[in-house]
Image (cartoon, rainbow, N blue to C red; front, side):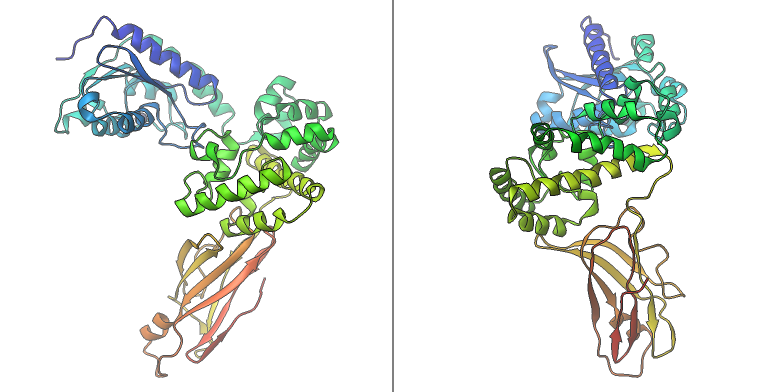
Length: 458
Ligand SMILES: [Zn+2]
Protein backbone atom coordinates (compact mmCIF):
# COMPACT_ATOMS: atom_id res chain seq x y z
CA UNK A 1 0.00 0.00 0.00
CA UNK A 2 1.22 3.48 -0.83
CA UNK A 3 2.44 5.61 2.01
CA UNK A 4 2.85 9.33 2.33
CA UNK A 5 6.39 10.34 3.20
CA UNK A 6 7.40 13.37 5.21
CA UNK A 7 9.05 15.00 2.21
CA UNK A 8 6.03 14.53 -0.07
CA UNK A 9 4.22 17.68 1.03
CA UNK A 10 7.08 20.07 0.23
CA UNK A 11 7.79 18.40 -3.09
CA UNK A 12 4.14 18.40 -4.10
CA UNK A 13 3.92 22.10 -3.26
CA UNK A 14 6.98 22.62 -5.44
CA UNK A 15 4.96 21.07 -8.28
CA UNK A 16 2.12 23.50 -7.49
CA UNK A 17 4.59 26.37 -7.87
CA UNK A 18 5.53 25.05 -11.33
CA UNK A 19 1.81 24.94 -12.22
CA UNK A 20 1.38 28.54 -11.08
CA UNK A 21 4.37 29.63 -13.17
CA UNK A 22 2.90 27.84 -16.21
CA UNK A 23 -0.39 29.70 -15.74
CA UNK A 24 1.41 33.04 -15.48
CA UNK A 25 3.29 32.25 -18.69
CA UNK A 26 -0.01 31.67 -20.53
CA UNK A 27 -0.09 27.89 -20.38
CA UNK A 28 -2.55 25.70 -18.54
CA UNK A 29 -2.15 25.60 -14.75
CA UNK A 30 -0.49 22.22 -14.35
CA UNK A 31 3.01 21.40 -13.15
CA UNK A 32 5.16 18.39 -12.38
CA UNK A 33 8.56 17.72 -10.92
CA UNK A 34 10.77 14.68 -10.90
CA UNK A 35 12.47 13.90 -7.59
CA UNK A 36 15.43 11.54 -7.34
CA UNK A 37 15.78 8.63 -4.89
CA UNK A 38 17.18 11.06 -2.28
CA UNK A 39 14.29 13.55 -2.69
CA UNK A 40 16.30 16.11 -4.66
CA UNK A 41 14.51 17.89 -7.54
CA UNK A 42 15.88 16.61 -10.86
CA UNK A 43 13.48 18.24 -13.35
CA UNK A 44 10.60 20.72 -13.41
CA UNK A 45 7.98 20.85 -16.17
CA UNK A 46 4.92 23.06 -16.57
CA UNK A 47 2.10 22.44 -19.03
CA UNK A 48 3.30 23.24 -22.54
CA UNK A 49 0.10 23.81 -24.53
CA UNK A 50 1.11 27.32 -25.62
CA UNK A 51 4.88 26.92 -25.30
CA UNK A 52 4.81 23.85 -27.56
CA UNK A 53 2.70 25.54 -30.23
CA UNK A 54 -0.85 24.55 -29.22
CA UNK A 55 0.28 20.97 -28.60
CA UNK A 56 -2.72 19.27 -27.04
CA UNK A 57 -0.47 16.44 -25.83
CA UNK A 58 1.99 18.71 -23.99
CA UNK A 59 0.69 17.82 -20.53
CA UNK A 60 3.33 18.50 -17.87
CA UNK A 61 3.62 14.83 -16.90
CA UNK A 62 3.83 13.56 -20.48
CA UNK A 63 6.58 16.05 -21.39
CA UNK A 64 8.40 15.37 -18.12
CA UNK A 65 8.22 11.57 -18.57
CA UNK A 66 9.68 11.95 -22.07
CA UNK A 67 12.47 14.20 -20.83
CA UNK A 68 13.18 11.85 -17.91
CA UNK A 69 13.29 8.83 -20.20
CA UNK A 70 15.80 10.52 -22.50
CA UNK A 71 18.00 11.45 -19.53
CA UNK A 72 17.86 8.34 -17.30
CA UNK A 73 17.59 4.58 -17.53
CA UNK A 74 14.39 2.89 -16.24
CA UNK A 75 16.38 1.20 -13.44
CA UNK A 76 17.20 4.62 -12.02
CA UNK A 77 13.73 6.10 -12.64
CA UNK A 78 12.15 3.17 -10.76
CA UNK A 79 13.52 4.78 -7.58
CA UNK A 80 12.26 8.29 -8.57
CA UNK A 81 8.95 10.00 -7.78
CA UNK A 82 6.92 12.30 -10.02
CA UNK A 83 4.99 14.99 -8.14
CA UNK A 84 2.16 16.49 -10.11
CA UNK A 85 -0.50 19.08 -9.35
CA UNK A 86 -3.39 17.01 -10.77
CA UNK A 87 -3.86 13.29 -11.33
CA UNK A 88 -2.17 12.04 -14.52
CA UNK A 89 -4.64 11.35 -17.33
CA UNK A 90 -4.58 8.04 -19.21
CA UNK A 91 -2.03 9.40 -21.74
CA UNK A 92 0.28 10.69 -19.02
CA UNK A 93 -0.07 7.57 -16.88
CA UNK A 94 0.94 5.64 -20.01
CA UNK A 95 3.99 7.85 -20.50
CA UNK A 96 4.95 7.48 -16.82
CA UNK A 97 4.56 3.72 -17.10
CA UNK A 98 6.75 3.49 -20.20
CA UNK A 99 9.44 5.78 -18.76
CA UNK A 100 9.85 3.47 -15.77
CA UNK A 101 9.17 6.11 -13.10
CA UNK A 102 8.35 4.14 -9.95
CA UNK A 103 6.11 6.43 -7.92
CA UNK A 104 3.53 9.17 -8.49
CA UNK A 105 2.19 11.67 -5.97
CA UNK A 106 -0.66 13.87 -7.19
CA UNK A 107 -2.71 16.75 -5.79
CA UNK A 108 -6.17 16.97 -7.26
CA UNK A 109 -8.02 13.94 -8.68
CA UNK A 110 -8.98 13.84 -12.37
CA UNK A 111 -12.68 13.60 -11.44
CA UNK A 112 -12.43 16.68 -9.24
CA UNK A 113 -10.58 18.54 -11.99
CA UNK A 114 -13.32 17.70 -14.49
CA UNK A 115 -15.84 19.43 -12.23
CA UNK A 116 -13.74 22.61 -12.43
CA UNK A 117 -12.77 22.65 -16.11
CA UNK A 118 -16.13 21.57 -17.47
CA UNK A 119 -16.23 20.82 -21.17
CA UNK A 120 -13.49 23.12 -22.39
CA UNK A 121 -12.09 22.56 -25.90
CA UNK A 122 -8.53 22.98 -24.66
CA UNK A 123 -9.00 20.49 -21.85
CA UNK A 124 -11.70 17.88 -22.52
CA UNK A 125 -10.77 16.00 -19.35
CA UNK A 126 -10.12 12.28 -19.82
CA UNK A 127 -11.58 10.99 -16.59
CA UNK A 128 -9.95 7.62 -15.93
CA UNK A 129 -8.18 7.03 -12.61
CA UNK A 130 -4.43 6.61 -13.17
CA UNK A 131 -4.46 3.59 -10.87
CA UNK A 132 -6.68 1.81 -13.41
CA UNK A 133 -4.13 2.47 -16.16
CA UNK A 134 -1.19 1.36 -14.00
CA UNK A 135 -3.05 -1.77 -12.89
CA UNK A 136 -3.17 -2.88 -16.53
CA UNK A 137 0.63 -2.83 -16.73
CA UNK A 138 3.23 -5.43 -15.93
CA UNK A 139 5.20 -3.44 -13.40
CA UNK A 140 4.05 -1.70 -10.25
CA UNK A 141 3.74 2.07 -10.11
CA UNK A 142 3.15 3.29 -6.58
CA UNK A 143 0.47 6.02 -6.41
CA UNK A 144 -0.28 8.53 -3.65
CA UNK A 145 -3.17 10.97 -3.99
CA UNK A 146 -5.27 12.97 -3.81
CA UNK A 147 -3.07 14.98 -1.48
CA UNK A 148 -3.39 18.69 -0.61
CA UNK A 149 -6.40 18.59 -2.94
CA UNK A 150 -7.78 22.01 -1.96
CA UNK A 151 -4.47 23.75 -2.58
CA UNK A 152 -4.24 21.94 -5.90
CA UNK A 153 -7.78 22.98 -6.85
CA UNK A 154 -7.02 26.63 -6.12
CA UNK A 155 -4.46 26.58 -8.97
CA UNK A 156 -7.35 26.20 -11.43
CA UNK A 157 -9.54 28.87 -9.89
CA UNK A 158 -10.92 31.29 -12.44
CA UNK A 159 -8.65 29.97 -15.19
CA UNK A 160 -11.19 28.04 -17.27
CA UNK A 161 -13.90 30.66 -16.83
CA UNK A 162 -11.54 33.34 -18.16
CA UNK A 163 -10.58 31.01 -20.98
CA UNK A 164 -14.21 30.47 -21.89
CA UNK A 165 -14.78 34.21 -22.06
CA UNK A 166 -11.79 34.77 -24.30
CA UNK A 167 -12.16 31.46 -26.09
CA UNK A 168 -11.49 31.59 -29.78
CA UNK A 169 -10.95 34.99 -31.31
CA UNK A 170 -11.15 38.37 -29.70
CA UNK A 171 -13.91 40.60 -30.93
CA UNK A 172 -12.50 43.78 -32.50
CA UNK A 173 -15.33 45.79 -30.93
CA UNK A 174 -14.26 44.54 -27.50
CA UNK A 175 -10.57 45.19 -28.20
CA UNK A 176 -11.53 48.77 -28.97
CA UNK A 177 -12.78 49.20 -25.39
CA UNK A 178 -10.12 47.35 -23.35
CA UNK A 179 -7.58 49.08 -21.11
CA UNK A 180 -4.23 49.60 -22.82
CA UNK A 181 -2.76 46.92 -20.56
CA UNK A 182 -5.36 44.31 -21.58
CA UNK A 183 -5.08 45.36 -25.23
CA UNK A 184 -1.33 44.71 -25.06
CA UNK A 185 -1.95 41.42 -23.28
CA UNK A 186 -4.00 40.21 -26.25
CA UNK A 187 -1.95 41.68 -29.13
CA UNK A 188 1.52 42.17 -27.61
CA UNK A 189 2.84 38.99 -29.22
CA UNK A 190 1.77 39.82 -32.78
CA UNK A 191 4.97 41.74 -33.51
CA UNK A 192 7.82 39.45 -32.43
CA UNK A 193 9.25 40.46 -29.04
CA UNK A 194 7.87 43.98 -29.56
CA UNK A 195 4.83 44.56 -27.29
CA UNK A 196 5.58 48.29 -27.62
CA UNK A 197 3.95 48.15 -31.05
CA UNK A 198 0.55 47.18 -29.59
CA UNK A 199 0.97 49.68 -26.79
CA UNK A 200 1.61 52.57 -29.18
CA UNK A 201 -1.18 51.51 -31.56
CA UNK A 202 -3.73 51.36 -28.71
CA UNK A 203 -3.91 55.16 -28.76
CA UNK A 204 -5.34 55.10 -32.30
CA UNK A 205 -8.47 53.15 -31.32
CA UNK A 206 -11.26 52.60 -32.22
CA UNK A 207 -10.51 50.55 -35.34
CA UNK A 208 -13.25 49.85 -37.87
CA UNK A 209 -11.61 46.75 -39.35
CA UNK A 210 -8.74 44.32 -38.82
CA UNK A 211 -7.00 45.98 -41.76
CA UNK A 212 -7.16 49.32 -39.91
CA UNK A 213 -5.84 47.72 -36.73
CA UNK A 214 -3.01 46.16 -38.71
CA UNK A 215 -2.19 49.41 -40.47
CA UNK A 216 -1.95 51.19 -37.10
CA UNK A 217 0.33 48.53 -35.65
CA UNK A 218 2.51 48.09 -38.72
CA UNK A 219 2.70 51.88 -39.01
CA UNK A 220 4.60 51.96 -35.70
CA UNK A 221 7.32 49.79 -37.21
CA UNK A 222 7.45 51.69 -40.50
CA UNK A 223 7.69 55.04 -38.68
CA UNK A 224 10.37 53.85 -36.25
CA UNK A 225 13.98 54.99 -36.69
CA UNK A 226 16.18 52.68 -38.69
CA UNK A 227 18.07 51.54 -35.58
CA UNK A 228 14.78 50.45 -33.95
CA UNK A 229 13.72 48.67 -37.12
CA UNK A 230 17.04 46.81 -37.21
CA UNK A 231 16.74 45.79 -33.56
CA UNK A 232 13.21 44.59 -34.27
CA UNK A 233 14.32 42.53 -37.28
CA UNK A 234 17.18 41.06 -35.22
CA UNK A 235 14.63 39.90 -32.64
CA UNK A 236 13.24 37.39 -35.13
CA UNK A 237 14.17 33.71 -34.96
CA UNK A 238 15.95 31.86 -37.74
CA UNK A 239 14.00 29.32 -39.80
CA UNK A 240 14.67 25.77 -38.60
CA UNK A 241 17.24 27.34 -36.28
CA UNK A 242 18.28 26.52 -32.73
CA UNK A 243 15.14 27.97 -31.14
CA UNK A 244 12.81 26.13 -33.51
CA UNK A 245 14.54 22.82 -32.94
CA UNK A 246 14.65 23.23 -29.17
CA UNK A 247 11.04 24.47 -28.97
CA UNK A 248 11.97 27.78 -27.39
CA UNK A 249 10.23 30.02 -29.94
CA UNK A 250 7.52 32.53 -29.10
CA UNK A 251 4.05 30.97 -29.58
CA UNK A 252 3.18 32.48 -32.99
CA UNK A 253 6.56 31.63 -34.51
CA UNK A 254 6.43 28.11 -33.10
CA UNK A 255 3.08 27.42 -34.76
CA UNK A 256 4.19 28.96 -38.07
CA UNK A 257 7.49 27.08 -38.28
CA UNK A 258 5.95 23.77 -37.25
CA UNK A 259 3.34 24.14 -40.01
CA UNK A 260 6.17 23.21 -42.42
CA UNK A 261 7.99 20.88 -40.04
CA UNK A 262 10.82 23.39 -39.57
CA UNK A 263 10.87 22.56 -35.86
CA UNK A 264 11.89 19.00 -36.70
CA UNK A 265 13.86 19.27 -39.95
CA UNK A 266 15.42 16.15 -41.40
CA UNK A 267 19.26 16.25 -41.59
CA UNK A 268 19.33 17.42 -45.22
CA UNK A 269 16.89 20.28 -44.59
CA UNK A 270 18.65 21.19 -41.35
CA UNK A 271 21.97 21.42 -43.15
CA UNK A 272 20.52 23.51 -45.98
CA UNK A 273 19.01 26.00 -43.54
CA UNK A 274 22.13 26.10 -41.34
CA UNK A 275 24.22 27.21 -44.30
CA UNK A 276 21.62 29.65 -45.65
CA UNK A 277 20.94 31.19 -42.23
CA UNK A 278 24.63 31.76 -41.55
CA UNK A 279 25.34 33.20 -45.02
CA UNK A 280 22.33 35.50 -44.92
CA UNK A 281 23.05 36.84 -41.45
CA UNK A 282 26.71 37.43 -42.32
CA UNK A 283 25.65 39.42 -45.37
CA UNK A 284 22.78 41.52 -43.97
CA UNK A 285 23.23 41.55 -40.18
CA UNK A 286 19.71 40.30 -39.45
CA UNK A 287 18.00 36.93 -39.88
CA UNK A 288 16.18 35.94 -43.08
CA UNK A 289 12.53 36.85 -42.65
CA UNK A 290 9.72 35.43 -44.75
CA UNK A 291 6.04 34.82 -44.10
CA UNK A 292 6.25 31.04 -43.70
CA UNK A 293 2.50 30.56 -43.94
CA UNK A 294 2.46 31.99 -47.47
CA UNK A 295 5.15 29.66 -48.90
CA UNK A 296 5.91 26.01 -49.47
CA UNK A 297 9.21 24.68 -48.16
CA UNK A 298 10.61 24.67 -51.69
CA UNK A 299 9.53 28.26 -52.24
CA UNK A 300 11.19 29.39 -49.01
CA UNK A 301 14.52 27.87 -50.03
CA UNK A 302 14.39 29.39 -53.52
CA UNK A 303 13.43 32.78 -52.04
CA UNK A 304 16.31 32.45 -49.60
CA UNK A 305 18.77 31.97 -52.45
CA UNK A 306 17.29 34.69 -54.66
CA UNK A 307 17.17 37.30 -51.91
CA UNK A 308 20.77 36.58 -50.94
CA UNK A 309 21.78 38.22 -54.24
CA UNK A 310 20.14 41.54 -53.42
CA UNK A 311 21.58 44.65 -51.80
CA UNK A 312 21.00 45.42 -48.13
CA UNK A 313 18.52 48.29 -48.63
CA UNK A 314 16.25 46.20 -50.89
CA UNK A 315 16.44 43.31 -48.47
CA UNK A 316 15.47 45.48 -45.52
CA UNK A 317 12.37 46.63 -47.40
CA UNK A 318 11.58 43.02 -48.29
CA UNK A 319 11.98 41.89 -44.66
CA UNK A 320 9.54 44.59 -43.54
CA UNK A 321 7.08 43.59 -46.29
CA UNK A 322 7.22 40.01 -45.01
CA UNK A 323 6.64 41.26 -41.45
CA UNK A 324 3.49 42.91 -42.82
CA UNK A 325 2.24 39.57 -44.17
CA UNK A 326 3.22 37.64 -41.03
CA UNK A 327 1.51 40.02 -38.63
CA UNK A 328 -1.62 40.42 -40.76
CA UNK A 329 -2.04 36.64 -40.68
CA UNK A 330 -1.45 36.56 -36.95
CA UNK A 331 -4.16 39.18 -36.47
CA UNK A 332 -6.53 37.19 -38.67
CA UNK A 333 -6.03 34.26 -36.31
CA UNK A 334 -6.56 36.32 -33.18
CA UNK A 335 -9.23 38.88 -33.98
CA UNK A 336 -12.81 38.56 -35.10
CA UNK A 337 -13.95 41.53 -37.14
CA UNK A 338 -14.34 43.11 -40.55
CA UNK A 339 -11.35 42.73 -42.87
CA UNK A 340 -9.99 40.99 -45.90
CA UNK A 341 -9.13 37.29 -45.51
CA UNK A 342 -5.36 37.23 -46.10
CA UNK A 343 -5.34 33.60 -47.30
CA UNK A 344 -8.59 33.50 -49.24
CA UNK A 345 -7.30 31.42 -52.16
CA UNK A 346 -7.94 27.74 -52.72
CA UNK A 347 -7.10 25.00 -55.18
CA UNK A 348 -9.48 22.72 -57.04
CA UNK A 349 -9.48 20.28 -59.94
CA UNK A 350 -11.96 18.66 -62.27
CA UNK A 351 -11.32 15.58 -64.39
CA UNK A 352 -13.21 15.04 -67.63
CA UNK A 353 -13.15 11.78 -69.57
CA UNK A 354 -13.30 13.27 -73.06
CA UNK A 355 -13.66 9.83 -74.66
CA UNK A 356 -16.92 9.28 -72.80
CA UNK A 357 -17.83 12.96 -72.79
CA UNK A 358 -18.48 12.99 -69.04
CA UNK A 359 -16.78 13.52 -65.64
CA UNK A 360 -14.17 10.92 -64.71
CA UNK A 361 -15.29 9.38 -61.43
CA UNK A 362 -13.05 7.33 -59.15
CA UNK A 363 -9.68 8.64 -60.37
CA UNK A 364 -6.92 8.76 -57.75
CA UNK A 365 -4.67 11.79 -57.61
CA UNK A 366 -2.12 13.30 -55.29
CA UNK A 367 -0.83 16.80 -54.68
CA UNK A 368 2.88 17.26 -54.11
CA UNK A 369 4.88 20.38 -53.26
CA UNK A 370 8.20 20.50 -55.11
CA UNK A 371 11.51 22.14 -54.37
CA UNK A 372 15.24 21.82 -53.87
CA UNK A 373 14.80 20.13 -50.46
CA UNK A 374 12.68 17.31 -51.85
CA UNK A 375 8.96 16.89 -52.37
CA UNK A 376 6.20 16.86 -49.80
CA UNK A 377 3.02 14.90 -50.47
CA UNK A 378 0.26 17.25 -49.33
CA UNK A 379 -2.71 15.02 -49.89
CA UNK A 380 -4.28 12.13 -51.78
CA UNK A 381 -7.73 12.36 -53.29
CA UNK A 382 -10.27 10.56 -55.42
CA UNK A 383 -12.70 12.17 -57.83
CA UNK A 384 -16.41 11.79 -57.17
CA UNK A 385 -19.26 11.19 -59.65
CA UNK A 386 -18.87 14.82 -60.73
CA UNK A 387 -15.14 14.43 -61.51
CA UNK A 388 -14.25 16.70 -58.59
CA UNK A 389 -12.71 16.07 -55.18
CA UNK A 390 -15.05 16.12 -52.22
CA UNK A 391 -13.19 19.03 -50.60
CA UNK A 392 -10.79 21.60 -52.12
CA UNK A 393 -7.37 20.11 -52.79
CA UNK A 394 -5.96 23.04 -50.84
CA UNK A 395 -8.61 24.76 -48.75
CA UNK A 396 -8.68 28.41 -47.73
CA UNK A 397 -5.90 29.17 -45.28
CA UNK A 398 -3.61 26.51 -46.72
CA UNK A 399 -2.69 28.04 -50.07
CA UNK A 400 1.02 28.73 -50.28
CA UNK A 401 3.24 30.26 -52.93
CA UNK A 402 5.27 27.52 -54.61
CA UNK A 403 5.70 24.91 -57.29
CA UNK A 404 3.30 21.98 -57.19
CA UNK A 405 2.51 18.83 -59.09
CA UNK A 406 -0.87 17.13 -59.37
CA UNK A 407 -0.40 13.47 -60.27
CA UNK A 408 -3.43 11.81 -61.82
CA UNK A 409 -3.47 8.02 -61.92
CA UNK A 410 -4.92 7.84 -65.42
CA UNK A 411 -3.57 4.33 -66.01
CA UNK A 412 -5.51 2.79 -63.11
CA UNK A 413 -8.60 4.73 -64.13
CA UNK A 414 -8.70 3.34 -67.68
CA UNK A 415 -7.58 -0.14 -66.54
CA UNK A 416 -10.58 -0.28 -64.22
CA UNK A 417 -12.85 0.64 -67.12
CA UNK A 418 -11.41 -2.06 -69.40
CA UNK A 419 -10.93 0.48 -72.14
CA UNK A 420 -10.71 -1.09 -75.58
CA UNK A 421 -7.71 1.11 -76.53
CA UNK A 422 -4.27 -0.39 -75.74
CA UNK A 423 -2.73 1.10 -72.58
CA UNK A 424 -0.79 4.26 -73.24
CA UNK A 425 -0.85 6.88 -70.46
CA UNK A 426 0.59 6.16 -67.02
CA UNK A 427 0.42 8.66 -64.17
CA UNK A 428 -0.14 12.11 -65.68
CA UNK A 429 1.76 14.86 -63.81
CA UNK A 430 0.68 18.47 -64.15
CA UNK A 431 3.22 20.88 -62.76
CA UNK A 432 2.05 24.39 -61.97
CA UNK A 433 2.97 27.38 -59.89
CA UNK A 434 0.88 29.24 -57.30
CA UNK A 435 2.07 32.82 -57.00
CA UNK A 436 -0.90 34.46 -55.29
CA UNK A 437 -2.29 32.66 -52.23
CA UNK A 438 -5.32 34.93 -52.27
CA UNK A 439 -6.56 33.61 -55.63
CA UNK A 440 -8.56 30.56 -56.57
CA UNK A 441 -6.59 28.19 -58.80
CA UNK A 442 -8.43 25.58 -60.81
CA UNK A 443 -6.30 22.93 -62.52
CA UNK A 444 -8.51 20.61 -64.58
CA UNK A 445 -7.53 17.52 -66.54
CA UNK A 446 -9.20 16.58 -69.82
CA UNK A 447 -8.20 13.05 -70.63
CA UNK A 448 -8.91 10.22 -73.06
CA UNK A 449 -7.03 6.93 -73.48
CA UNK A 450 -4.94 8.64 -76.19
CA UNK A 451 -4.04 12.02 -74.72
CA UNK A 452 -4.70 14.84 -72.26
CA UNK A 453 -4.71 18.61 -71.79
CA UNK A 454 -5.11 21.19 -69.05
CA UNK A 455 -5.52 24.95 -68.61
CA UNK A 456 -5.58 27.56 -65.86
CA UNK A 457 -9.25 27.68 -64.90
CA UNK A 458 -11.03 29.62 -62.25
ZN1 LIG B 1 -2.27 14.16 -19.08
